[in-house]
Each structure stands twice: as C-alpha cells, then as structure tokens.
Image 1 (tube, rainbow, N blue to C red):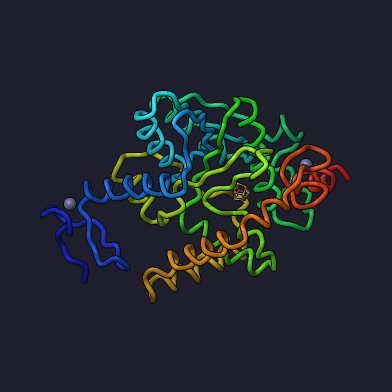
Image 2: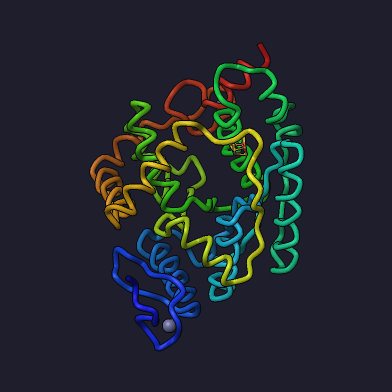
Length: 306
Ligand code: SF4
Ligand code: ZN
Ligand code: ZN
C-alpha cells in the first residue's frame, strides 16, 4: 500500500509513483512534473535561449500540458518565442471542439496560434480519406499528413524548432510498433531530439518523453488545464492499441518497464544515430526529410489522386 502522506512534505498523498516508491501531495506532484520536464529539456539540450518554438497544439491533454510548461519556461528566456501551430484534419464533430479548446488556451496564455488545414494544404480531409477505403487505416494517412502540415506551418512562421507533446507511453509504444513492423531504424530516428547533422530540416523536440501518460492526465487535472476528452471517430491503429494494453499490463506487474524500454531505445540511438540520420535525404517532390526518393506524404497523395 502506498503511504497516505507525501514523501516530501506532510501533505496528503494524491499519487504514488510505484517504481520509485514515493508518494506525492498535489503541490509536490506538480513540482515534480515541472522539474522532470526541465531536466529533460536540459539533458537533451533541447532549447537555445533565442529559439522560436513551433508547438504542435492539438487541444488534447498532452499538447495543452506542454503549452503550459513551455509558457512557464519561456518567461525565463525573454529572447525566445513560442507559437502554437494547430492542424485541422477535417474530422467532423471532433476536431472543431479541440481547435476551440486550443484557441481559448492560447488566448488565455497570450500565445500566438497558426491554424492550417488538410483541405488547404492537401486538397482533402481525413473524413474523405476514410471514405476512400485505400487499404491502410485513416490514421496512417492522418499521421503522415499531420507531420507534414506541422513542418509547413513551422516554415511559415520561421520557427527554429518544432516541439511535439509525445509522452513516455507514446514513445515506448512506437519503439515496439517499429520492431513489429520490421523497421528498427525508425527507432533511431524517433528520439527525444531529431536533428539533421547537415542542418537541412528543422529540429524536432519531445520535452514530455520522460513523463508517463497517466501523470500528464493528473498534472492537467490538478493544474486546471481543460482538454478534449472525446475520442476521434476514426479510432486508433489496432496494433498500437494492443501494444498499449500489453505495456500497461507489464507496467502493473513490473513497475518501471516503460522507462526501461525508453532507456534501451536511447542507448540504441546513441550507438547508431549518426549512421541513420545521414541516411535522410530530401524528398524529390516536396523537399521534406525522407529515407526514400519520395516522402511518405507524397506517396500517399499520389495514391489518393490515382
Ligand atoms: Fe487522425 Fe487517427 Fe488521430 Fe483520428 S485517431 S486524429 S484519424 S491519427
Ligand atoms: Zn508534498
Ligand atoms: Zn514529399
């Protein structure tokens, strides 16, 4: 049984971090999350004092939490800038609400926001792609197009970095997903920081990669951050769902499993990062980073147009 008092003060415990054997009251928990976020940023050298960060803001719990944390951090760096970029994928009854929540948060926190849409960038929407029944799930297209849309939006505002709100669970699910897809080199390219050694592409950072999903939900709740709770009607990839369930079961039976997996991927990365990143080249059609002649988005756009 976790102790009923905070391990750091005498306050009432609201959360036990089992693999560390510690409990937190509300205040100490929020401080611990903010400290972990700062440590991740520092450890991976994620930010420069004069960065213009494009934060991918969906309106979900992760990106809104990252918005709050970055706003706090940015106050200490007066020469840095933060702009939220939101993507309208065209999902009826779902994306509108998220975009409204994102817009309200930006106006409350005084952060500029740029919204781009699949319709204007690619001439289609995720709803329309779902109806085409192209063989892959709508998520496969939606995820690839979102990455491209965020790249484009970041370019429009002359950002120096793109920050995304992937959490620990997302990261370790992706590690296993790439293994099961037979694409282990992707693990190397999907680290907490993706920087092109030749400087051709904007660096991408993931400052929440050390924080488990359930801790982000609790932090958002305790901090009063409002976020979208309804699920996308197109659902998620089936394989990722199975991996999520498996990892959650492992974490209950063997606390710390997710962190161990993340550290294993980190070790792999530091060993072979140089090789795979220099493999990246520019898409022949749009110039985005890819390991093939055409990037995934351009291949998909050709399939949709066919
Ligand atoms: Fe797009 Fe799939 Fe996410 Fe829905 S669940 S927003 S279709 S990636
Ligand atoms: Zn406390
Ligand atoms: Zn391309």
